[in-house]
Length: 348
Image 1 (cartoon, rainbow, N blue to C red):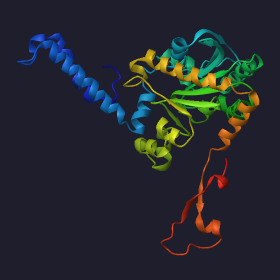
Image 2 (image 1 turned 90 degrees about the horizontal axis):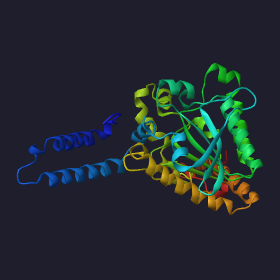
Image 3 (image 1 turned 90 degrees about the vertical axis):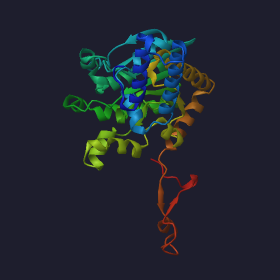
Image 4 (image 1 turned 45 degrees about the horizontal axis):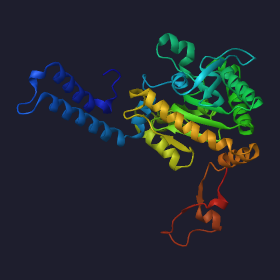
């Protein structure tokens, strides 16, 4: 099997034995029919796969999110949407091929779908800039969102990027400003917005199209302020601590859902979306439709109020007890930290 991940090695070994058995039926075990042995081994592989993928760590899920065979934004557009008509350019500088968007249909719903797109090979990756958009990509995305608002169309964003492009040209054309403007304008956009993290959700590059009424994550995607390798280089002074950093950052769908930072986890096909893109796309489509239909029942003012409240609720902190009470703890054994209640939550 190509592009085998390290934790899938036991599966690879069992699959190799199964392939050999199918090629050479005469080698089957004595006292057990060939068909029975094949069926038993297939059952063993399926059970092993369930065991492995039921208990993956954060770093393992990061590896799946980056799998080269994983479906990209345009794959989901082809599998879950119809009548996609791509729109180009930011009307200011250029057309960024790392950011793709256009009109589409999601069943009977007319929508604007926007997302970051990676490449499958070197040539395509150069064209797509490895899925890392320039300022013009975010300005194009905002232009399409405002066009959607004008025609009363919901916006669906599909996020899969390691981050915005940090090059000199990108900085010269104000990448930080372009993302900041998107954050502000998406908060005020008077149309339903759904964001789905389908692979990598890296830093401001993801947030630039991630302000939404509902934020979904595929179960093997990640969403983080910094890639694990970058965090490891800063905190542990070595990139080899990336696995430790991934666990500490709480970047998986399960962690972020528990923290209330994402609204729903979308199940993938067993073994990751790359094992069955059509099944994963179907599951994503069901989730998108359910959330879209719920949002369309709300008035524009209600959606905006809920969106504001949702993002203002981010950023709970804790403060020292003595700072709150104005005096030192009663005893050395007293708990020095206290989680603040809802009325005292510090907002960011």
